[in-house]
Structure formats: C-alpha cells, structure tokens
Image (tube, rainbow, N blue to C red; front, top):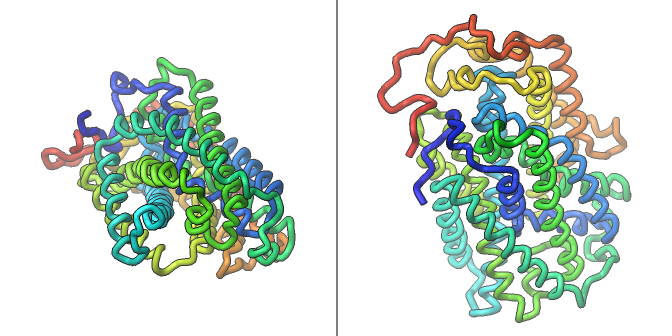
Length: 489
C-alpha cells in the first residue's frame, strides 16, 4: 500500500472514498487498547465502588460524545483537518491555536498508550520468559512499540484504517477472553487500598471520575475527528449518517475498553497501579492474549494519534512534509514515554494531563461549533489554505490572519478553566465556588463561548457569506514544491 501523500491540503472529492462504516471501524478498532483501557482504572483508584465507577464513566462519555461528535461534520464540509478548518473562526493564522491544542492532546495520548502498553508487555514477558524488569528491558520495548507506531503513522490513513478493521474484531475477542480470565476474583466493593474517596466525599470524587475517565475520552477527539471525516464525501453520505456513525463509534470505542479496564481493576485488585496487578492476577493461559492486546492495540491507537500529530505539526510548519513531521513528533512522544516511566506517578500524571487539556481544549471546540452553526456548514475550502500557501487575503484573513475576538475568547475560557481545575498537586482558586468539585470544563466552555458571542455578536461575512469573493487572495511567490496543495512524501 503506498504512503499517503496528503497533508493538511484539501482532499479532492474523487479521493474521498471512505464512508460512515469506516468511521465506526476506526473509532472502535483504534480505541480497543490499553491506553484507553487504563482510564477505566481511574475511578476505582479514586476510591469508588463498581457501580459508582461505571455510572461516572458512562455519564461522562455520553455527555462528552454528544458535545464532541458534531465536530466531525466540520471536516466533512471542508475536506481538511479540524485545526485548519477552525481558520474560519480563528483566522488562517489564528487556527494555530487548534493545531497546538491538537498536537498536545495527541502527544499526551500517544505517550500514555506506549507507556502503559510497554509496561504490560515487559511484565508479561517477565512471567513468560523471565525477562528482567530493568531500564534496558523497558527501553527496548518502548523503542519497538514506537518504531511500529511510526511505520503505521507514516504510511497514513489507509493503512491505519485497515489496521483498525482487524483490531475491531481481534481486540474484541481478546477482551472477551479477559472478562473470563479476571471474573473469578471480581468484586463490586471499593478497593480498601485506596484509603477512601480521593477528594474526601462521594460526589466530588464521582464528578472527578466522570471528567477524568468519562468526559476526557470524547474531548481527546476534538481535533482528531476531522482526520477521518475529511476522507468522506458529503455528496455520497449525508451529515446525519456521518453524525450517527460518530456517536456510535465514539460511544462503543470508549465505553467497551474503559469498562473492561474498570472490570479488571476490581478483578485484579489494582488500586494504586494498573499494569503490575493486571499481569500478576492474570491466569497463565491469558498471558499470551494479554501480550497481543498490549502490543497490537497500542500500535493501532498510538499510530492514529501520531498520524494526527504529524498533521498538526505540518499545519504549524507548512514547509515540513507530513512524513517528516510525523517522525519529528515521534521522537518527542518517545521522550515523554521515558519521562513518564521514570519520573511520574501514573495516576497523578494521567489525571493532571486530561484535566488540563480538557480545560484548554473545550473553549476551542465550543467556538468552532458556534462558527459551524453560523455558516450552516458552508466553508470556502480554498480560503482556508491561505496560511499553508504563505499567501495573504481571503475571507478568513480577518486582521493579519487572526480573528482577535475568537482568540481572546479562547484564551479567557482556557484561563478560567485552569483557575477552576482540581489536580492532585494543584487546586484552582475558583474551586471555592463549586465546593471543591472540578467543573473546569464547564467553566472554560461556557465562558469561552459566552465571551465569543459577546465580542462577536453577529456573524462576520466570513461566517455568514462563505462564498463572498470580494476579499481576494494575493499570492506571494512560493518556492517550488511548497504550498498547501503540494503532495507530501
């Protein structure tokens, strides 16, 4: 299969051959991995019992999916990724906000997937082959996972889609075997090793679990969904079908692995750590399936995240090819894996990461959705590519390429969210308004959206009349082989 040649340029309609079923396959297959499963361990580690853990994950996932899924329709109309599409609201340069947010989201989740997958692989190989659990073993396994991940990400969307189709079937079977493997020691009681509720009370802890384990899953896709729907043609598939496929793919792709993680956390008594107890409690017959799940699942999920990172870096640095950008971010992600293994506590690192990025990502998504509603899904695809061509002008030029009201609104929303966040090592001053309950994503989204509507009360011509060509694009001379519509190796 040839390497994908497209970066963040506009995908021609004849190349947009995917459909809603492919969207479900990629959202389901790529998420059946330990990097997503481990989020199901968070509620039990917070001191909640089985039923409270399940309800928090389900509630957070359903709410997050209802909010996130409509973003899939943006790239369905623009034929490019979501960060580039957000130039309609933030300006063709201001859409760098989305690129940076997407890059950070994908970077964190890539590192987390390789981290937890590698830890389980080393532990399983230790039981099966006596592999020593030292720095050399972890380094070799992390490097192998990272190399396999880079290969899939560089080849691009078609290879990752084919891999997701296989994983959707194979990983489902492996998880079903896992339910049988850990069922004998399953309990619905809270794990006593946690020492009680993490935040001192049931509801604050339950809400923390709903955000950190449930809501964070869909929010992780606020910049990723467009990577897949840009290959779906709106002339052959309706928005309703694509939206329904996104709901189904996100809901199933997140709930199945996370609830498996919750189930195995109680079955393995994994209170303070997940990878170690998961392997220790596994019956011998399940070790090989667990090794397959840790390796293949991690490559599938991290590959998609790394693919998205390559697109976001390509959007930030238009001169870089997608393949070169992907290899660059792979090095950074691998460095984060080693830092995570040697320097961070798993529970604290995961919780802090998802809460912080949820706080800064939510207002960007809200503003993008407001713009989508205002323009009724009609965009000028050519004008969105101005920055990538190093040109000027167009209906999304605003002020030197930045829509100041949108950028300020995002910054204010993100700032308020950070002031309302509750982390293991930090509590924002606005927590006193909510009784210590982390509502940072609500504050950041509501404030960011409200400020945007206040500063931008009526649709700008770029949102209300996307085909107004009065604002012409002036092209600067570009070097040969550059520009958004170039093919990228």
